[in-house]
Length: 146
Image 1 (cartoon, rainbow, N blue to C red):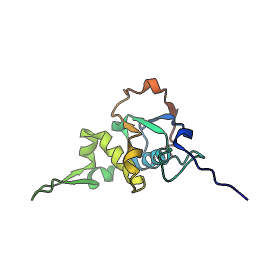
Image 2 (cartoon, one colour):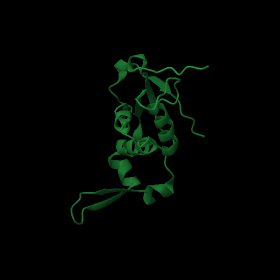
Image 3 (tube, helix red, strand yellow):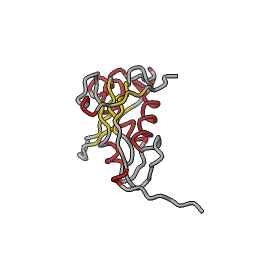
Image 4 (cartoon, rainbow, N blue to C red):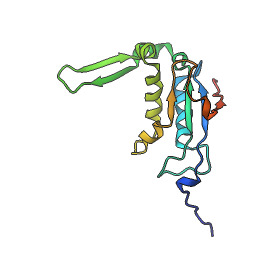
């Protein structure tokens, strides 16, 4: 007979990882980072609590996207007022808010539960190479580009 071990919050240990988004496709980056945030790379993964690691993503401005998508992909917002519908193309979003592009892509890959916000609390995205998490000593992760 096999016994199922119940993992408690005290037993979980959170590691910090550093991911360089320079030259990496947006979708590949999002799926890889979402699986780390969820904790799929660990043997202690549970669906009822956050057991994933923390991620620091740098160089968000230099993420790679297909040229067709730069003008075709739109981000939509609505202010709930009449005529308050706005659409912004990906090209403009990458210029103004490159962090939001990566955060929205990763958020779309996470499970649609109450834990999504807690997963996103472990995500830190920066437009350039400077970040303020040197004291956590993040381990650098390489994402295969092809």
